[in-house]
Length: 407
Image (cartoon, rainbow, N blue to C red; front, side, top):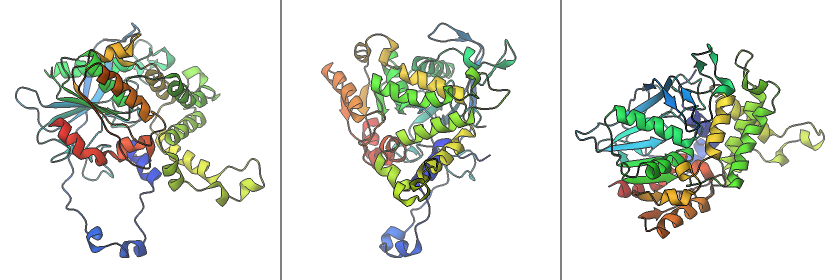
C-alpha cells in the first residue's frame, strides 16, 4: 500500500492535481513556467511512545497505550524551542517531510514546516503526535490505541468496550510524551480543526507551559449545530447492518456505512465553489433523467474518493473521534469562557474564510471572548475556494503571518 498520507490522497483527488494542458501552459508567461529550485525532502522517522497505564477523563484505565510521534528540527539545550503540532480529525502526526525520498507526497503542512519555512526547523523543534483512536489505524505509518486495538485482557479488539475519549485525553497523552522528553515549555501549540481543539485545550489546561497559541480552522467550543452536523458522519456507520454494534472485526468492516460517512466528511470539508470545480454538474448526467435509481456521477466519484480513505480507516475509530469532537469545549467543564480566561499565551486565530464546517464566526466569537478578557489575541482569515480544507491546502497563504507571530 502507498505511504501517501490520507489527507494528501484526498487533496490530490479532490483538487484534481493533473498537469495543465500543453496549450494552457504555452499561454503562460515565461516567468510562470520557471520551476522553483527544490530542496531535498525533509526525511522523518515515525517513533512510538508507550504508557503502561492511562486513565481517561471518564475514569476508565487503558493498559497499555501506544501512540506514534514525529519530530522535525533539533531540540536546543534548554529545550525552549519546541512547537507542538496537533492534528485534525482525519490526519495523523505526519505533519511534514517524507518517510523516504520516494514517497509521493509530504506531510500535510509541509508548506510551512521545514528549513527556512514559516515554522523554521533550523530554529524550532517541531513535534506531532498521533491521537488515541486515530482514524487511520490500518495505515502502517500510524501508531494508535483505540477500538481496533487488541485488548490484552480478552485477546480481542476492544470494539465498543473502549472508553469514550476526549480532546482532554489526547492532550494528556501528548503531555506524558513531552514529560518523558524533559520538555516543560512550548514556544507554541498549533493545530487545525480537531487539532485546534487540542491546541486551545493545551493553553487553557496548562497556561504556564504554552507561550503562543495558533488555532487554525477551529474554535474554543462546539455548538449544537456543529455537533449534529458531525452526527451525520456517525449515522451511516451505526445503521449499516454489518456494523454489528461495533463487533465486526472478525467479519470485516461495515464498508458501505464507512464509505458513506467518509463521503459526508469530504463534502463537509469543502466549500461549494471548490466542490463544484472538482465534481460534474447534474445536468451532464443522462441516466438520472429517466431512471430514478440511477446515481449522479458526482456522488459516484465522491464515494470512490471516500473508498480510497476507507482502505486504512476504521469505522469505530470514526465514531470515537466524532464523539471526542462533539464533546469539546475549552476546559472540558461547564464554562468554556471561564476556561479561556486561564490562557496566558499570545493567540492567533486563523479560520478559513469559506469554512462551512467550523464556521469563521465560531473562531471570531472565541477570539472576541478572549479579547474581552484582556488577552493578547489576533485574528485573520485564510482565503481560498476550498472552505475548511483551506486550513490545510491553503495554509501557505498566511505563512508570513505565522512567521511574524512565532518570532
